Length: 364
Image (cartoon, rainbow, N blue to C red):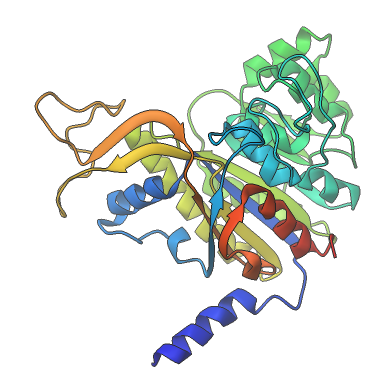
């Protein structure tokens, strides 16, 4: 097999679906899952670099993550850029940079999920963090302050387009009930009145959910069977669907964060197996995190001499160095399916919105 054949095969993998639009888009967001985290997760799981499925997807790019006025982003500004195509300020959810955090609203920015709702597609927002946290919230809510759970989640009941998000899964059940009650909303009956099945754990979802909310508290659920159920349910819509699935990959607790990165890799792989060739599948991170491989030897445990907070044992030099904070370097975007050929080179976080819109055929 010669080099020319390999190059042609690689190009074909990226462009084979270019002639047809995507019916569905699945956007995976690894929260804080930068390149260094993926590298460490590969070594932890496979004892080698480039062992993750994500690292072998056919189309890749490096994506910058800045806000409208700062190099370092939080998840609110980062997800706003990805899901609306516009940069905004830290702490602001899907509003323009005319917002003043906590004091003044900016212009509401239509999200990709809202574009999908306006066109009659089914939609889903799935996370293992609180459902009102910045990444999921930026998909369905507009706010000048990310830390207002009641006002954020109440927007599920008053969608700007369509009938609102169809599948909603996330933590924060007690906080949602409490914060919406302060607004005079009895949220569970209100959700049921809008046609949702409301359950207390993701495992209680119907086998093929069409319109369901799973609000839970407690540890992570097993996301693979949940993903399979959601894809079956959303696929019932002949017009297609949009699904955003976030998995927290912060490595302030290095073992937990890297284990979650490995889980995310399995989720992306499974999606490519069950979603079908008319689905654009994208993995990226909203921002990176300050984890670095600073030593270690091949064949030795990567996490040796680190406590659960990433602090080194006295007198040791662990392989990893962790400063528990966001960082501003580029993150990986990996993709396959219709429209994936545009994922190449160096792109802005706002470009990802245009790539997904083009994949659907909506901005041509």
